[in-house]
Image (cartoon, rainbow over the protein chains, first blue to last red):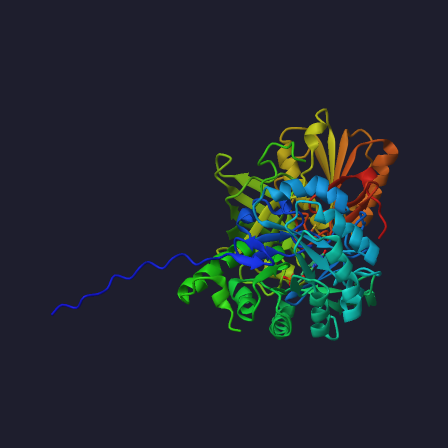
Amino acid sequence: MTERTIPKKPAPAPDFTALIAGVRLRNPVIAASGTFGYAREYEGLLDIAGLGGICTKGLTLAARPGNQGRRLHETPSGLMNSIGLENPGIPAFIERELPRLRTLGPAVIANLSGSTVEEYVEGARLLDASEVDMIELNISCPNVKAGGMAFGLDSAAAASVTGPVRKAAPHKPLMVKLSPNAPDLAAVARSCVNAGADALSLVNTFKALAIDIRARKPVFGNISAGLSGPAIRPIAVRMVWELWEVVKVPLVGMGGIACAEDALEFLLAGAVAVQVGSATFAHPPAMTEIIAGIGEYMKEQDLHCLGELSIR
Amino acid sequence: MDALPSGFFAKRSILCECTSSSFAAGNIIALQFAWSGPAPRGGQFFLIKPWRSGVFLARPLSVAGWEPRGGPEDGGILRFLAARRGRGTWELADLRAGEEAELSGPLGKPFEAASFPKGPLALVGGGIGIAPLLALAVELGSRPFDFYAGFRSTSFGLESLKARSLAIATEDGCEGLKGRIPDFFSPQGYEAVFACGPLPLLRAVGDACIAGGIPCFLSMEKHMACGVGACLGCTVKTTGGNKRCCADGPVFRAEEIIFDD
Ligand SMILES: Cc1cc2nc3c(=O)[nH]c(=O)nc-3n(C[C@H](O)[C@H](O)[C@H](O)COP(=O)(O)O)c2cc1C
Ligand code: FES
C-alpha cells in the first residue's frame, strides 16, 4: 500500500497589520521620535515606504533652538543626547513637512511636546485639525528645563496635561509617551489612561550623566542627558511586561531595539508595535531588516497574525 | 533643496570590502574600500563601522580620494585617512584588507570650487584635516591651486598631490617650515580659500579671509550620531541660526560661523 500524503496548503503570508487605537499600520515597526528627522533625511538608506509609521521630532507650539553646547555622547552600547527639543514649531511643521510626510505611506505620528499645559493644548488643537494620523504626547523629554519630563514623573501631573490635550484633540487617537524615570510608572500609566489616553508608548530615554575626566566637568551643559540604545533594552522590556498587567490600552514598546530578535522581545511581552530609534544611527537599514525578521519568525513559528506573537 | 537634480546627493548604506589598510604617519592610517554606491565629491564624508565592532555608532570620515572604476554606475575605490583617537577609530585603524565595514554615504555638502573659475585657489589643511582637501585637489584637475598643510611632526598623504605650490609646516620643525600654517598663510591673490583642520586654524584662516574680502569655506567637525541631519546632535552655530554640521555642512562660509567654544 502506498502512503498518501495530503498536500499541505501553502501557508498564507502572515498578517502584519498592527492596530493602535484605530490607526492601522502596515507592520508594527515605527521610527522613534527625534531619531528620524522628518524622514527625507534617510532617503536612500532604507526602505522608508515599507515602515509601519514615522514619529516626528518633538514638536512645540513655537519654534525652539534646542540646547547649547555638546549634544551627543556615546557610551558602551548606547548614546546620551541633550538635544532639547529643537524644532520648527507646529505651524511650520504642518505647512512645510507634513504634506510630504503624508505621501510616503507610513502612518504619521506627531510627537507633541511643551513646557506648560496651555502650550500643549494649543499645539494639540493645531494637530487635531491637521492630517497627522495620531498624536504621541511626549511627557518624558529629560532634556528641557521646564515641563517635558516633569509631567511624566507623577500621576497627578500626567493627568493634568493628558486630560486637556485629549479634549483639545478629540479627532485624533492619543498615545502618551511615558518616562522610565517615573518612580511609580504603573501609577502614571493608569492616570494617563483614566485621563483619556488611547495607547501608551514607552520608554523615552533614561536620565543619565557622563563626566569628562580631562576637562573635569560634566560632558553636557545641562549636567544630565537622556540615555538610549541597547544598554536600556532589558529595562524597557521589563517595563512593558509590567504595564501590560496594569492597563488594557495598546502598548508600543521601545528602547534599544537593534534587530528583529530585540523587537520580538517587546512584541512577546505584550506590545502591539515597536519603535526603533538609536539603532538607525548605528545601522541605517536596521528597521527594514527588523520588519523582514519579524515576518520570518512568524512563518517559522507558524503564526498568522501579529496578535499571536504575544505570550501574555 | 528640492530643486537639486534628483540623485545629486543620493546616498546608500553598503557593506563594503576594505581593500587596503596602511600606515601613513604617527597615529594616521590610510584606508581604502570598494564602493558600489554614488560617487562622492571632495568635502563629503561617510559613516563607517567595521562589521565586527564593539562600539555602538559608526564614525564619520571625510573622503580623501575617489577612483571611479569606469562609468558613473560602476563604483570605485574610496580612500580615507583615519586618526586613532578613541575606541571607534582604533577599530577602523585595525581593519585589514579583506575585512568588511558598513559605509553610509556620501553625506554632507561638498566644497563648491566651480563657483570660482578664475583661480588661483588656496587649500589650507591642518593634520587629518587635509583629507577632504586632497579629494578637492583631484577635482580641481589642471586648475591652479596652492596647498598649505600643517602637521605636528611629519607630513602624510601628500604623495600624489598636483599643486602649483605646496607649503608644509610642522610644529616641531622636523619638516618644512617651523610653526603653524596660519603663521605662513595669507589669502591675498587667491580667488577663494578652502580650509579644514583644528578650530584655531579654521578661525585664523577664516578671519584673515574675511579681513581681506576673500571668499572662504571651512569644513567643520562635530560629534555625530545619524550623519544625515535627522538627530540634530551636531549643531554648528551660525549667523543664520543653528545648522546641522552633517547635512547643512560640513562646509560652511567663514562669515557664517560663530566660533564660541
Ligand atoms: C537624538 C535623540 C533625540 C530624541 N528626541 C526625542 C523627542 O524629540 N521626543 C521624544 O518623545 N523622544 C525623543 N527621543 C527618544 C526616542 O524616541 C526613544 O524613546 C529612545 O531613544 C529609546 O529608543 P532607542 O533606544 O531605540 O533609541 C530621542 C532620542 C534620541 C537618541
Ligand atoms: S549627526 Fe545627526 S543631525 Fe548631524
